[in-house]
Length: 68
Image 1 (tube, rainbow, N blue to C red):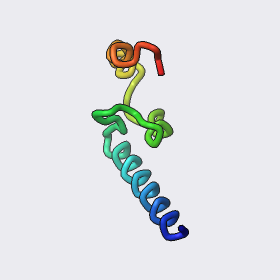
Image 2: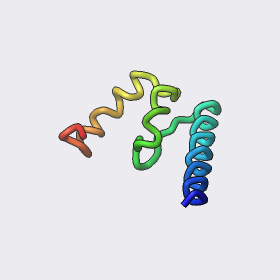
Image 3: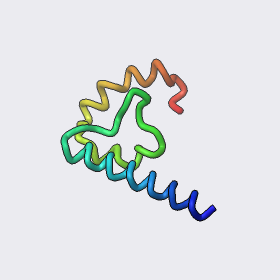
Image 4: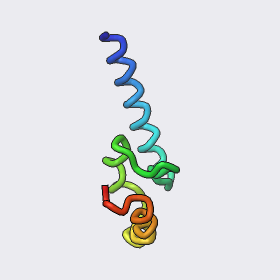
């Protein structure tokens, strides 16, 4: 069980490093599936402006009309 826990920890750390590097290089943490729970904490650090996010809002309502 410890080995599995260590593997998960390494995978999470690698994902964090990748997302941080994406932001550093001018990218964003969004993807074809949007922002998931593992990316949410990076969302405020991305290069997306309020105007960028406002432009996406109408699409979000189409796919998630209940705002979940």
